[in-house]
Length: 161
View 1 (cartoon, rainbow, N blue to C red):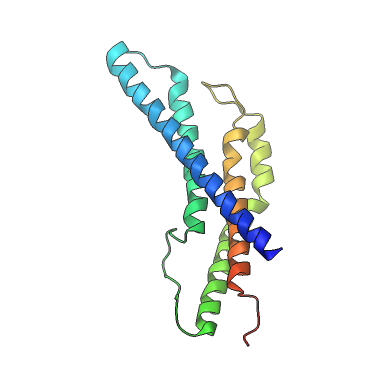
View 2 (cartoon, rainbow, N blue to C red):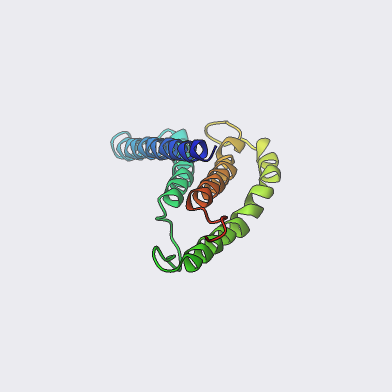
């Protein structure tokens, strides 16, 4: 079971990294198209700016999950990698508590957030804004899953021998 969770966490991370790169690549193509269209044709399709913005949202949040998994996310204090087991376990649990305290309420209130945005449509593309706002709870859920896998991997819940 533990091995399966760790493997799934790694595959989910690989998927998120690839998808984030895809969204950023599409965003780059759309921005280049906007610049070329503005200066060559004096006219830009309205939907390109909105699509680029939505790609940025999805790419950024999926990139945040990859940064969390790789432990390269921004932080105030870097946890110790060596030292006493107690110090390492305390820092691991401290980080876990901070992540849950910060992201837990976001995930808890995401259903209301999605319901509010479901009936709003984007101006240019005409899709429900909920498809864009879905990136927030998806990223939070993925980060929390990676956190659980990391705790499982580190054995932070075990009593010292």
